[in-house]
Amino acid sequence: MTIVRETPAVGGLELVAARLAEWQVDDGPVQLHPGDLGWFWRFGVERTAGAVRTWARDGEILAIGMLDEPDLLRLAIAPQAHGDEELARQIVADAVDPEEGVLIAGKVYLEAPMESRVRDLLFLEGWDADDPWQPLERDLAEPVEDCGLAIEIVTAETAAERTAIQRASFDGSTFTDERWHAMADGTPYARARCLIGRDARGAAVGAVTVWSAGKGRPGLIEPLGVVREHRGRGYGRAMTVAGAAALRELGASRAQVLTPCTNEGAVATYRSAGFALLPQRRDQYRKE
Image (tube, rainbow, N blue to C red):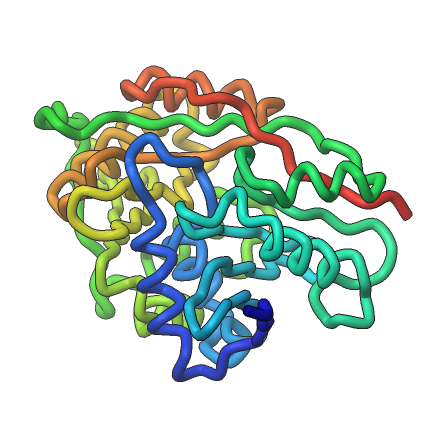
């Protein structure tokens, strides 16, 4: 059967989110998560649909890509299709040709599961490996310890404080109240939570958003931030622990997070919160 690529309509995003959730399995590859889709949803449903590409055979979706940027495609593949030669060749053919409307011309990046045939074929096309990223995870079989902060679940009424924390934690952040509400209206947020952490004086020191893929599946922490003036006091670890606890309450089997290997402080923070290192991963890129 022929592999068919599509850009879904807005109404197709619910199925995309469902497939991404189904493909999150324990001991499987770290790959595009419904939480990644949910976090992108802050830009609005139309833009989110426009950033998605699906590849299907005989009506069955086998791969989903999301353009985090016009030059970065992040890919998830159904567990049974990582070695599917026909699928991989079609994805690569679409990705390398700017006329196909997947990636733009010039230097571009593609994030594919490390075990997928797509990576082999991209190397044959002359693509190179980019700088490494470090996935980490914490098993949630056992109860999570108290994080030491007062934790609040963000609601529509308190969204403004959540977005303010984000902007105070990340230089150049464009996370506005409007974007929080757009994100919260998205399908993936039905299984997500935003949390705010407060110190003993009641000051908001950090925030985290966590995304469940369903009971018994790995959940995602994305994003997590500590307000600049409150850094260096262990609040990053505390918010990570709070996020893990929330994911356990949502039924996740484990909590996962991904950070550049060069961000040694983030790696140390996650490890201090009980997260273990997973094999490093590298995007691939085409030179200009």
